[in-house]
Amino acid sequence: MTSGSNQPEDGLGERLRELDAADSPQSEEQIDRMFTDMKARCDKNDRTIAGFLRSRSTMMRRLIVLSTFSVLAVIGWFAFPVVGDHARTVPWTATLVTFGVLLVVAMFMVTRPVHLPALPRWQSACLACIAVGATILAAFWPHPAAQAATHDPTGGAMAGVCMGAGLLLGVPVYALLRLVDRGNAFGSLVAASAAGLAGNFVLKAHCTVAGTSHELLGHASVALVFVVGLGLVHRVTQKPD
Image (cartoon, rainbow, N blue to C red; front, side, top):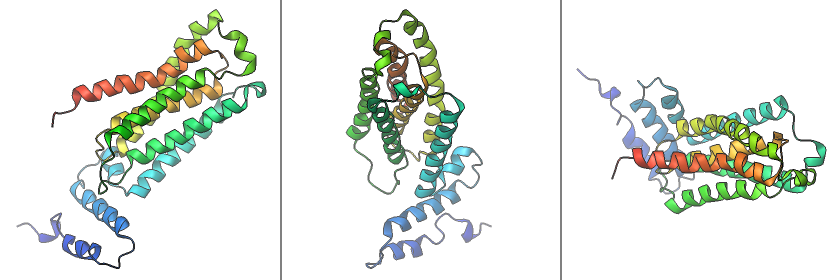
């Protein structure tokens, strides 16, 4: 015999009545809490990492992502030598800040509460275009000492190294955002944009082989591969409506 307390609907009526109260000042938090509780009950047998992360509240998921991003940024910043003082120009700093802000925007888009209306498709597409465009624009802002290295033949050889490193660096970011995603329609595209930005952030901070051609081939290409490549994979594997 099945006990009524094991049903997912247990207590749902009382929660809905609470949300219908006209003077409830925290209805959105209550809705998100209700979804989290129901999700946890439905996925109680899911012992995977994805099941655990997706059953957390919106605030907790965002804290997890921000904390992970911060830890990775601190480790990456101090584990490898940053570009020299002569290369830390205003454009260089502005580029890193821009990449960081776009990463946070992507995180908020992926962890958007499910009970809210879905984001318009154009917003996800816009973020992807901005992410790729920002990495391309950053390639035209090399530090002054690197201007003469624009046509350095070694830059092309090192472009493949930077591209490979950038792709590897972006994989953890993509994986984390996909794990906390509860089913956004374009969550894969947003996560791919964030992965490309993360790879470019690290490359811009540490790569000493500067120059427009090198940064276009070795840095900006990382964002392009993530956005276009993963975007095509998601489109092919997505089930038709």
